[in-house]
Image 1 (cartoon, rainbow, N blue to C red):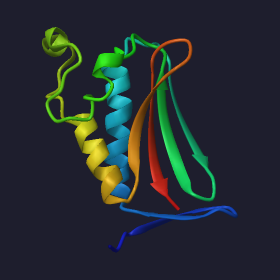
Image 2 (image 1 turned 45 degrees about the horizontal axis):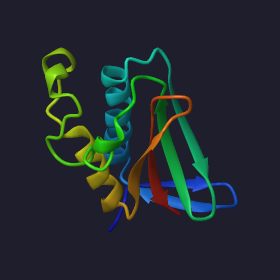
Image 3 (image 1 turned 90 degrees about the horizontal axis):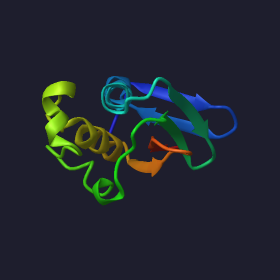
Length: 126
């Protein structure tokens, strides 16, 4: 596939990507953290090594119960359906992020943040 953007990482290689899709993925991750975490602080970091570039969005909010961790990337899944009217959304954002990551040969993962909250990491191969 041809991508209109090449992000070069000093001495590590390059990530070939569609910048609009990556922007959408990162925007979805940040939007979810803002709307659903209840956290006052959200951090976005970029880390690179020889294998991948990783964009992480981390909050220190209410977190996601472990029993929902495997399902959060499924379409229409809501961790707390009762909050849907309050926070909005259709439960598609994380499914879209995963689809975009996989279109680029990467993936997105969910890890707990310390001491509480969520860390979503979008990994794109070099």
